[in-house]
Image (cartoon, rainbow, N blue to C red; front, top):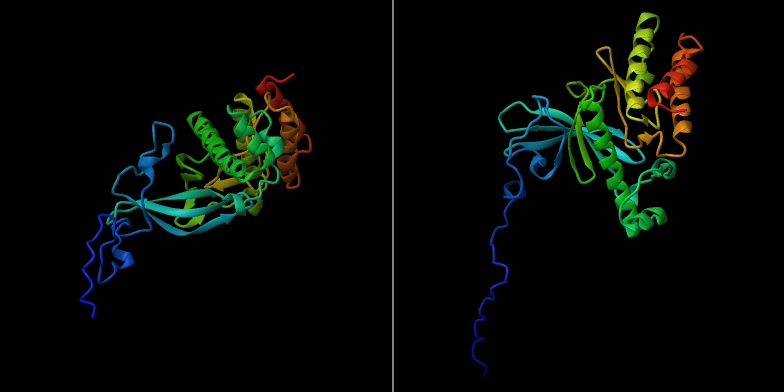
Length: 286
């Protein structure tokens, strides 16, 4: 008859037996409140001087408040960041889609004039391999972060880019409470209000042209109006007017689209053509 089995010595890498699993809400890797710890410390930060409202405390947590917008390339969420027990600040979290869920259907023309140093990476993006699609996602996020940083520092009306962490871009939330500012397409301005918004747009586009850029996808749907102030958004595809061989075509399309919206509401028909020539001169294009 066999005796009792010898007790196995516990290995150094064996999991320790826990009679009662730790509840999810007590997970030491999660904050006591909110959905995650602030990602500020590991992210690329926006330009200085930073606005006073930017929360940089290591003890801050991020809380998801809902979806602001869904799109083919990215979704935008409303996130509140703050130290528990203190008022938080609300930001827009733009999250570019993963490779299997993303449809960068118009990126080929925009990518001309943008290059990466490694030929392997360039081939991967051109051939749309899984690795290449991930690179494209990161490149779009980085391009928008860089453009916003440059334009915000130059005083142009764009949201402040708080940070870039992988393919997530945290931006200044343009709106009140949990309600985003309306898009220009949602408004029905006329008379003096229409003329004022057009004047603001002209100045903003001239600022882009001074940097040698066109928005690349401009329309009344990616212009916000907050308390009478026009704000440019959605700038991942910003186009280099000189480096991109189709730069002038993108500029023509930008001006045509937005001018048609304004002229349909009473702006003179000549406004678009005048704006185009102003931008060409501002960019120093022949």
